[in-house]
Image (cartoon, rainbow, N blue to C red; front, side, top):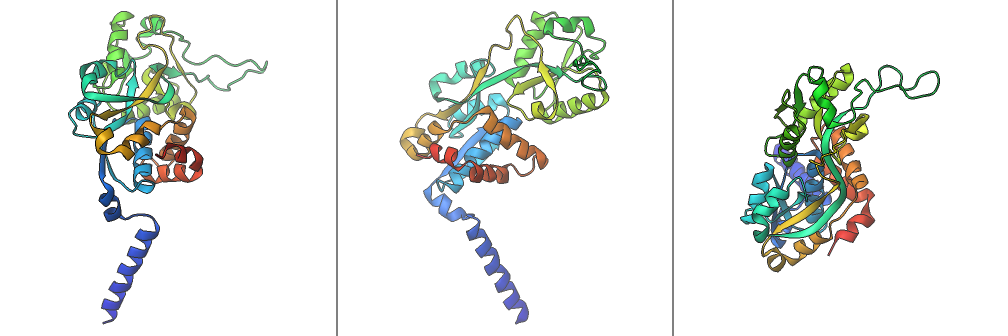
Length: 305
């Protein structure tokens, strides 16, 4: 009897906690389910979880976010397998994907402006940052331009450290290597996690390294980094991150459509959320998105239909 009462008490307590925290799957499901795709970049992990948190906590929808390679993400929206994404880097990085499916998707415009992609190196000095004269010491990698990489292939180990092979930045890097004659280099495929791990190790040991990089990303807050000049404009100018939805979403889920259309923030906003996620090792992105909702309530309210 005591065990039965204890079990009943535990179940009641669990239900009370779930209700007080806003976790009520049946209530959300009653309003509808939304499925979104994203790529596993720090920026898009942040934005996907941000959108999911608002849909669930503010609008009472059940929301599933699905990680995919970039090409799969675009096809999933075009084929109606998912309702949309907030991870379209345009006009350059994902431009070729957009051209393939533009008649089968709807572009709601930018949700974040001021992005950039390219090749990145540490901008860290040897020893102290400033000399006794007060002048800044020179960085340990004295390279300014992609064109200069040809002269230093051996120091960079003949490698450009990349991410997942289907990412738009990888295709741009293939083009850049041909355009700048980087025949002594190979582009190393991997993931964002493996790229950042290599960068961290290189900065710590002051080794020469060049990686595929983009803004917004928390690594620019963590280390002193710089983009290499790209005089041939292979990587284009500053870009935007757009929201793309499937055809028919406006008619079938007008409230969700209006929220996604309203969703806009700045690189500083996204950067704050990315740093919070990174501080916990990347394992609690949804909880950090909830924290962002509490601390930026006016911004979040501006997104609501």
